[in-house]
Length: 174
Image (cartoon, rainbow, N blue to C red; front, side, top):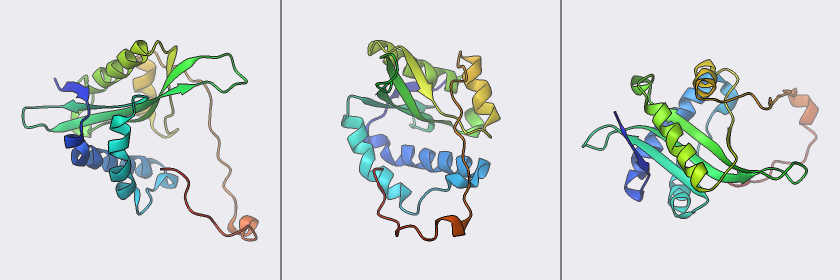
């Protein structure tokens, strides 16, 4: 059974590899999730910052003494919008277990680490998003108590509908 622990700087390359696999898997489920050309560079720039930020956590699942990572989860402290009743939440940004380690308890242990951190923060709940096409992800989170909360809809526009817009500006954020 993998050891679940908080990520450190020495994990950066291995977490980046898992993160790239996560992105590839997401893109295979839905082409709109294709990673940007500079995604890895952005990850490498931001990973050390995330580790130092006490409002964020990255957990890893380490399989053996050699340090083989078989999963990771990232999350950050989150709050409800001001128009809703105030609640403290932990938002799960990314959650990934390599295919060969799935259905062996690794995901449940990563989720437990997220829950433990949320309880340390006295958060009211975990919140996350799952691709609509990720049936296994939906089943996993439902099996550990997750309930549907909201649906995100996308309306694809035809190119001619937005050709007259201003030129695209630089990317915002990560």
